[in-house]
Image (cartoon, rainbow, N blue to C red; front, side):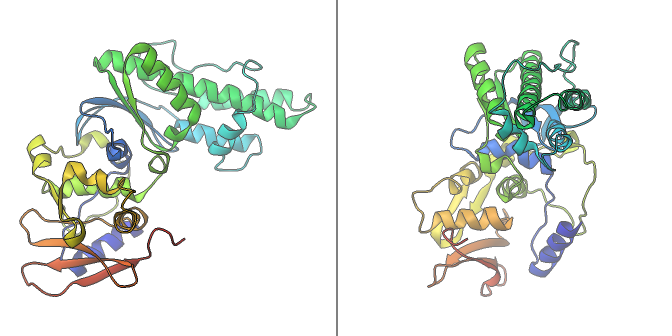
Length: 349
C-alpha cells in the first residue's frame, strides 16, 4: 500500500500515466531480459517463497494456471525447514548451501503428489517429514552439523525431484518443448543443474534469469510495466494494492501492440523497440554510460516512460559529475526538464 501511494503521488505530481504490475508477472517475464530470451509460447515454473505454480504462457498477459501448490510454497518450505533445525528464518539459502555438504543417500524423503496425476504441488508434508527426521535423530547424533547437512540434502533432493517431475509432466501435457523457470527458488543451483540435465536428455529448452533477477528486483517490474505501458495500457491514478490478484485474470497484450512499442531514452540512447529494452540491461561494455542507466532502472524501480502519442517522455542525461538524472519532460508544454531523482553511478556503493 505504501508503494502504491508513492506511485499515485508521482503520477499526479508529474502528470504521467500509472500502470499496475503483477509481482509474479514480473518474475515470469524476467528471463526475457536475457540475450537468449525464450520465445512464446512456453511453460513457466514460478517458484518462490510465496508461490509455486505452473503456467502455460501463450504471450504477455495470456496465462493459464495449470498447477499450483495446495499449501506451502517451495521457498516457504525451505525457510520453515531451516528454522526447525535452528538455521534461522528465512533460512532457505542457508539450507541449500548446507545441503552441498550432505551425504546423498543417508535419508530418503518422499516426493509429494508425484504418484498421482495432475500438476498441483504440496510441500507441507515434506516439511513435517523433515521435522520428524530431525527430532528422531538429533539425540543420537555425534555431529549435529552433519545431521543438518544430511537432512538438508534429502529435503532439497525431494523438492527438486518433485519440481522436475511436475515440469516434465506439464511440458508433455501442453505439448511444449520450452520451459521457463523464475522466482527466488529458481536461483537454487541443484534445481538448475537437474533441469539442464533433463533438458539435454529429453530434448527441451530451459531458461532461467540471471541470479540477480531471480529474487525480487526493480528490473523485472520495470520491464513488465514498460511493456504494458507502451502497449497503451495504463490505469486511473487511484490504483491501489491488490491482494490475491489472479494472474490468469490479467489483461493480455496483443502481438501488434508489442511490435508498436518504442522506448525513448533521450540523447544518450535514442529510441529502442520494446524487445530491445533488455539490451539496456546487458550492454556492460559501455560502462561509462549504459551500465549507469541500468543501475538507475534496477536500483530505484524507476519506470522509463514514453507515451505512444508523444505527450510525455522520460529523458536520461548525465551531468558534469557523471551522475545520471531521470527527468520528466512534457512535449506539449515544451518546458524544461523536471528532475525526479538523481542516482550515483554503478561503481558507487
